[in-house]
Length: 258
Length: 379
Image 1 (cartoon, rainbow over the protein chains, first blue to last red):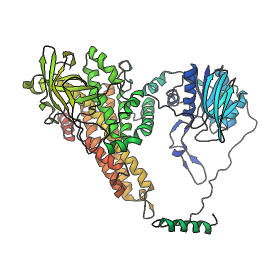
Image 2 (cartoon, rainbow over the protein chains, first blue to last red; image 1 turned 45 degrees about the vertical axis):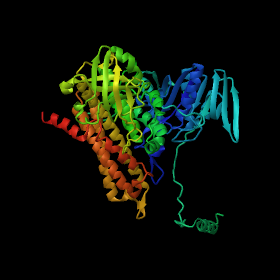
Image 3 (cartoon, one colour; image 1 turned 90 degrees about the horizontal axis):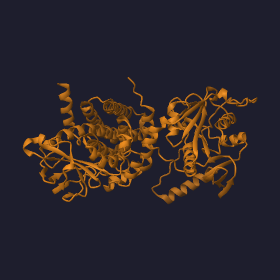
Image 4 (cartoon, rainbow over the protein chains, first blue to last red; image 1 turned 60 degrees about the vertical axis):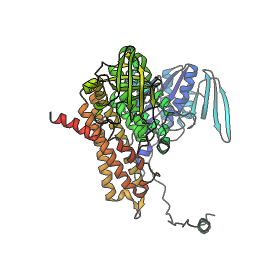
């Protein structure tokens, strides 16, 4: 059995700054594996350990994703090997284009039985790539996955649905997007981190992949931040809680909120 | 000159920080309040190979370099100084002398278990009347037909009574002073060995440091570490490395106090604006950040000397002296920035302040570090 985890190497938005015109400065943000992707790796790793499967990481992006530390960070979390596509044309690439690159990479790897992704990327959070990737591959896509077990050709998948959960049996290859709390990622051990440098890393040229050219071009033409509503700055004296509560209710009614 | 950490060192910092935030930081205040040793952390630390970082994999260690090891101690101490010294004392003071001076048989019996974290270690040098003057110890090891008989008292023994293996220093020839001191490996259940009441300390209250007693404690000849008379040399060489571990602990405490101060200065509003906008606070933060960074450079430099196989006694002493005094000063300023709140248990800086002081005292006081440094400078 061969399992691929598609992960993103990107910067944490909490370390970025947003200017008044909405542009984002990432220069002081430290890159790392996207927040929810270690959950996907952990979910896939448990399945791989149970099924004796090979666990392969795949990532694609602009300059930086091919850095040795990026591969070591992923390999240190238990992947057997990683496949990297680093190309500056993937800077701010759309989700459908990225999914197409990942799909071609997965075809290049061959004999892949399952693809697992994180819930969403920490920087864009569009939750689109797993679904579009599945469409590119012609495989079913399952989101909000909380558990997966089984072998190639017969997977038992649990997913969260509004108000409950659902159990699915999947008989062929599929793309699963792990829910953010599907598993608690293991902290990498020191030996695992030190051994990561010895694991295989395959760098693919984007030009060598048969990614279809897109006729439609989408570019961001404007960004803006939502207007900040002026605050009333009204403070309540909570020395007498009952009086403060009454004052709060009066103020809310006066503002038309209640 | 390259000030960048390697990929592995950066990833080790992130991993240990993640572990410390999830497993250690949430219990740090409780360990301090209840004077409780975090026994439950030991298997978790062992699972991540944090109990034997600088030792080869074949010996049970992680096979990491010394810089990675001090980064791990720094990050653990940033969350909890007690946990930092538990790991540092086990690694630098107890496991290292077995690795460095042990016979093949001793390594086979002890090293793998200690470096992998299955067996906790302790270092027993200090006595009630022999602290800085470590050579004045009166614990004796009398040779008998079937081994040695230990008699005496050791105190401030980090990791006792939880440790399984103790490196004990005793006089085999009291007439010869420091040259009559020898080192021994003593197992916890040896008859005649006992542990006293826990000390109630100002800080690092999660670290257990009771006295231990030897009353006709019989140990085999094979328990001798190194040769008879080598004990003082073994103790001093061991402390050279231990000091780098303590300097990393001090660095972690200082960083924690700085982190807390930065966060507080940004959120605390006085005169209608965050106190971080006040120059008085900004200058304190600037001095703290500069001192912490300077300490870090000294600590990492000392560790890199170990990795390079260069002498590190002076460098370790400089790192410990500067980092420990920095920790105390930075924690003091942290309380000043927090004002009255900083004096309460509502914020971690009062614990940082109490924890910091010990780093100026144990494994050689600041005065001892100055002696070591001045001897080198005036040579």
